[in-house]
Image (cartoon, rainbow, N blue to C red; front, side):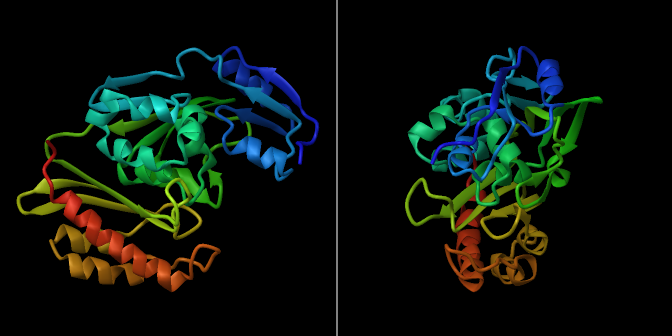
Length: 280
């Protein structure tokens, strides 16, 4: 199929993009790896595509005030090769090779993945696990939204119709930081049946500030808070059992909910071992 007719405009600045998005039915175009597919299947029918690829400064990676800031237009492939992301955001570095295939990562953007908020995608779960935040430009000016408040429902976020996500901000990893990532997919590059992004702080033989963000198990990435508490106490078995209270995955084309919950436990044991490893 081919997309329904639409107009096209190239934004010169973030402010110009916000202005263009004032037209009813306008949508942002960044990497287009999700949007173009939905256009071609006519699942999306925008009246105007606002191309933000020429906006200067949205493709930068920088360390500031104990954080790493990733511009919304940073391509997955660029982030995958970034030594700054490898050092300051090792969880993201672990997740990036699992996103689609090289052709997708060459065009797809970090901001696009977060904004699209597919519940089976890797980067939204990483943002949640790291307790990051996003910078958003809108008609009322810029604002910051924490990851815990950003994901509202299925493909639904804190972004309004005239908002542009500009920056992803993550706490830079310290020597005490521990991260883990694992997913199960039928084929590499497919969306995960179940995945887990985890972050914690080493505290002697145990962990503190444990954050477990599962994906592929609900309408958004899901924090497993009971499992977090058990894992912080050093009891992996109890953490796995706690998933029965934390997760209620629906049946879908990938697997039944009960299978997904079992697989979540398998991943939790794998990731717990990763968290126990000191960074090089």
